[in-house]
Length: 334
Image (cartoon, rainbow, N blue to C red; front, side, top):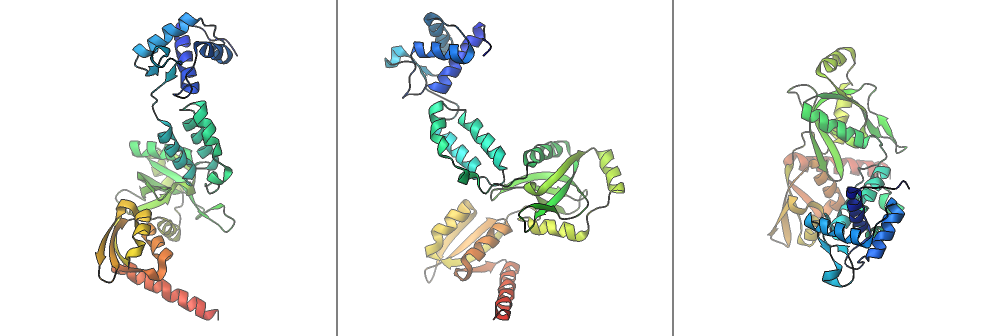
């Protein structure tokens, strides 16, 4: 590689060697540091220069254990993230299905690089299976960045909104682009959602970010011109958006369920602090949940007859109607 020179370069080179190759179990000798400086940065260093630069790093506040202290060598004692914290972050990224697979892998590599080579070796156990269920909309990060900026600047955006077809791919819900004013981005149940108004002061719609393509930020004049020239998606397309969302207004609703107490662990695992449980007669419990409708709806159908909806009444009525439709469907098939 092209040799790097200069006092500051030497200082940073030594820090990088300590960061990448040292920890309490792997203290570095001066000889090792000199070899790595030469091999990776093309720097020629003497033993005295290494010692002087490490003293400067100590004066700058870097927590480095020295040979005088441990009688073994030099190692970086404190890092911005310890290995346990990094592992939690890495697992969260690998498990986050709303991230495109390639972007998830890239983020994991960046997180791994915050520690040393020994930690990176431990994380190589992550297999393709850990990324198997990630969505593949490559515009996701671009969309998120643009939407954050448009919210700060109070700008409208246009985009094509899609739904998944039977082929597992995204297909537009309408031929025309949606034009909205973004107000907030939500992260719920491993998905990112955009809350946006169709027009100033009008109803709020909720869009999944991984279902948005061809997003563009509009200046106010251009947005006004666009609304005049461009056809808006039909009402049924706007209705489909609401159906896809966890809650059209993005607010968490109160739901009350009744279940056997033996399911308390399942409730805690699924809802966490969103749910409170109270023991009632007959080894039953009443569960008060503040969560998005879609999350509660999925839980109800997971447990079926083991879960009774007490509130709200419209949710209880909706479950009954769905059960009646299911009964008719299965009776017709006999």
